[in-house]
Amino acid sequence: MRADCSLCSNSTSSRQPLDFYPAAFSPHPLGKNYISHDAQLPNSFLEELKTCADERRNGSALVWPPSERTKKAEDKTSRRPRRRTGLGFAMPPRKPESGLKRVSVTRSRSMLSSGRHSAVLPSVLTFAVIVASGGLLLLIEKGMLSRVDTPSPLANGRRPDFFYMKQREPAVDVESQFLQEIRNRTIRAMCGQRNTPRSVWSLSPLQRKTLLQHILVNDEHRFLYCYVPKVACSNWKRVLKVLSGALAHVDVKGRMDHRADLVFLSNFSPEEIRYRLQHYFKFTFVREPMARLLSAYRNKFGEIEEYQRKYGAEIVRRYRKGHVKDKRMVAGDDVTFTEFVRYLLDEDAERMNEHWMPMHNLCQPCAVEYNFIGSYEQLNSDAAYVLEHVGAPSHVRFPERQTWYKPVTKETLHYYLCSVPQKLLRELLQKYILDFSFFGYSLPNITTEYCRH
Image 1 (cartoon, helix red, strand yellow):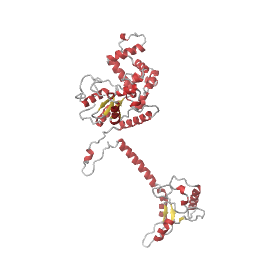
Image 2 (cartoon, rainbow, N blue to C red):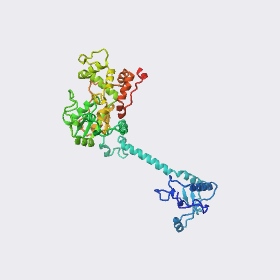
Image 3 (tube, rainbow, N blue to C red):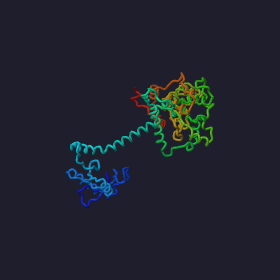
Image 4 (cartoon, rainbow, N blue to C red):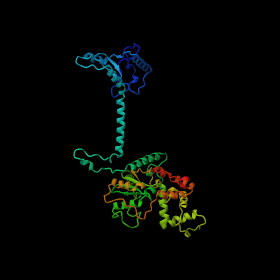
């Protein structure tokens, strides 16, 4: 709506032109005298608009005299006064010239009526374009269009060469992308809480020592890996040894040495640690917290005699009634899962053995901003992404699981969890609740009804 004319032709001298209401105007891309949609118009101006609308319904002509800025132009072109329509201003219809077919009044009225409704089309179309463009940019940012199969051109049925060029950024499947986004947002929200350490140097000495002793360094490929026991860390250590030349390939047989030929971030000075944390690619892998605990329990107390003597005997002595108090008389090879849970509840999370220490205590996701957090549940695809991202040679691959490996299935986890009293289970979940929250895992169903089935 232009603002350089009076409201209507039969307006009295008391009515003011639109220019009289400066509060109704704001900068607009169509010109400085256009009325902004969100402007605060005076009541007197709104009343005059209502009067004009009533006059229009009653059939009164609304001839809008030209402003001072347009008088000269109209005089030069001998244009008659313009009248107001639903689309703004329009010239009065001219008399039909000889040889031209006269357009029917009905058609003119229908076009004028449809013009009022079509006046909103530019705004709607603009909004639709903005929304579609935003969605397209989001898809491009997430990399979700990198896997769209582009159809071949119609010319010769062969794709241009640039379709075969290798992308710089390796592709991640959609599920992993969404999971990464959920974890990133959750970590940002939780780490934004007051008194949360946001750097390695704001951690307590014990927390910092634990963290730096669990971050492995590869300077050649410029990455840091925070390993979590019982989350395929042995295989990742094999990969690091192959990259450093300590192993010929990842399938070498023999017992894994978890310290030799590996470089830990704790070996460096504070300045060197800061540089690597700032410039290197940082990643870790996590696992469903209860499945990780069950894996540690079955492996350490069912297969490794060292853990049976060191931890198993102590657990039996503490929590099993009717047994000898002397640990030397207890083998520790028959610890029940409930006894193991009782032991975990009595332990300090920051001083636990690394195999059942909470994952967030090991890798401190608030103090270290990880570029990628992989999942044990989709280990192969996430590991392939990391190896491609760090530029590992093509012959270096992530190892296959060992033949003797016993996976923790959903049914197995359900069986063990339901064998523990409900009260202990609730306390156990509370102790590991931050692992569920940080890394986007849902709490297991431990209701009595569910366990009955």
